[in-house]
Image (cartoon, rainbow, N blue to C red; front, top):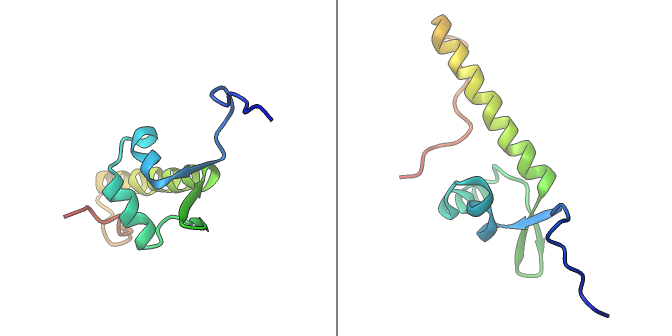
Length: 90
């Protein structure tokens, strides 16, 4: 059976090594996110697979946390400030 060209199709999953190209964040960041279980993954054999919907939900969650922190900073409401979901890499 001949393999189809899938370049025009939507990807449903990613490997950790592909995430820097599609997100602009380093591979070290994504490996840390997997190790600390910030991001749900599937393990298939030796491969670590991230579903596209999980990646989008993770990134959207980070966007909402960032926006919430900006509002709290601008209003001076630091008592209810939520800690950032992601620690910076050393």
